[in-house]
Length: 590
Image 1 (spheres, rainbow, N blue to C red):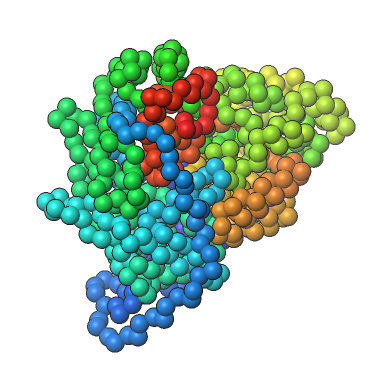
Image 2: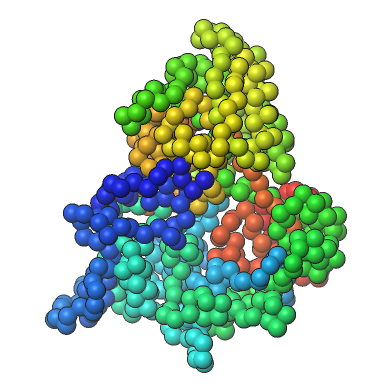
């Protein structure tokens, strides 16, 4: 589900939106996130572009500003240190062609053809400079971004050379997006100044913990020239330029004026298309393609049979959980709940009745476990796997669960467990019922239509409910899902510890991803100590098969694998004899 909540008719100032996190309710795709015309009542709307020797233009303007004399802004203060990670050492490997297969029409990923100011590695929070040469924090709400001097857009159709990517070009693109009411530019950023040709001064409306993640998201903040390139995509400045091949495939070749020296390392990324999944299975098995996303169980089996290849696994980022309703009145309405769930011992018993390893193993495509409040996909913010595995809440102990229920005076506790009528939950529901029964519970399964399930979840009208979110794009969702405000100023569970809410607010006020992650982990420890009303369940996984000749393919880095790593994909040198990892292993092909 994208969000269980109906769109709210309430208006919020931008500061309120930033504080609440409502901009990303339920893992909302940020590329489509725009603010309503009245969303900032009582507050100025949009980014104000204030370049040196240019007039200030507001996002709400309907035409060009009148020519008035304005003083050039003062240069930003001298920075102390950059927030960007140190430059990487030279990588070993050879040039060559990486071949990937897709079912249906071959279309290049914009992440390969466009550039961003920065790219954030979700595995550790490192901020890498793409177009940015340095990023310094000049004040609580001010950032100084110095651009690389050698960055150029791809040539526009019919042109022989691309325009330079300077501060004015970036500011113009951001201004267009502010006028379109896109959240990052109309809600987060207050002003953008260009005191020098290579310098941006960004001012924020309020502290915003996901600023760098959004600036590094291709769909949200890729820097684009005016006009469209082939495939109807914006003209970008990324490592590859795409063109259609006569056979219907796509060829991505290096951008000759790419702003990172000696990159990309590949001569070409070639995308080939097929009508059926089985054709790609055969092509990978025969060595005709190097990267193959495995969408069917049979595809996994065939990929594992290829010598010199490995199958990499990662979470789909579809957060799953078993939620408990703790109170009978929510948002002024009477709703279903079970008073026994207010007892910490009962909630603890439910946690310990479940065998998370078996739940993961019984999933048809496997599952990622142990799962904490924040998905392991966001390694910067998630609790370490070893810590979750050792936590008492996640220790499978049916006898202890029964003892806890007896101590709470609710032996053989009966309750209604609601689940949607959809195929992916069939096996999961049966496993949960069996384990809960072994732990002393007597759940009554209530299968409802998808529409009814969404309505009940949105209202918090259930005793217990099984749910799944659409793939989550940002790490804050897992934190907010457990908070009093929930994903949209409403908690389906009805209660959260105020100390946890305060810890979440602290985490989401940290601009540095590493510091945010530290605070996020502390908040989750508080949450687990309090035994939350939402039990995180193992997340479904997805797999890709990669030839062992390919190096640098960071599957578990998600979008970062394309926004940053793609320029560093390369071919293994003939003399290298490193054996491929075992089938089903996760991580990066280095």
